[in-house]
Length: 112
Length: 111
Image: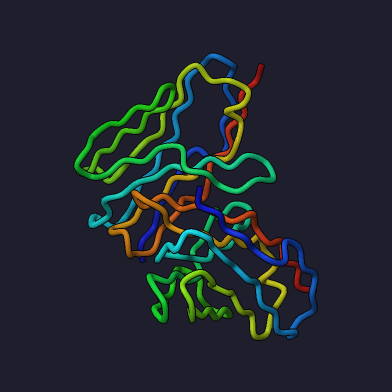
């Protein structure tokens, strides 16, 4: 069935360094790829998303890239700060009325 | 802002005792869904609903039921809970641009 893989499962970086999280998906019909951030004890919240007609999208220190041919997409966080420490989930879906397939998550720790 | 409420927030029950977790929204959104979150497995969609009386299975529907009799409510029903259904459950609504807005979560323990 449809599947989303995510790597690494844990990531530690020094404050100010960059962090990269990678996801691959199995269903080539997927065309919407959101990223969610979940802080400890809280609910997941959308931080950025990208659709299949776009190769890259940026929002301040966060960027997402998409390679549809290879079926993978990545989250890039620059100039990391301690408040970036959280679990990050990627996801994929085909249309607005389809199910959402999440990756298993990446636990990011930013060391001051 | 889209708001999703879930009740109860915490529940400890025993195997086989039917339970319902309620989910309500205040924004008249059509798409609602239920997820369970387990360590190392991320968020897995249980059921979703595109509108009143329209529901569909997600990735892990076994052991769960849902109903959508009115747009604002989407309860999750466990007819005969088992210990492997111990998990953190999130209800979510879909806002504009496909964003999922999650409720506060329900932590369920089945003994």
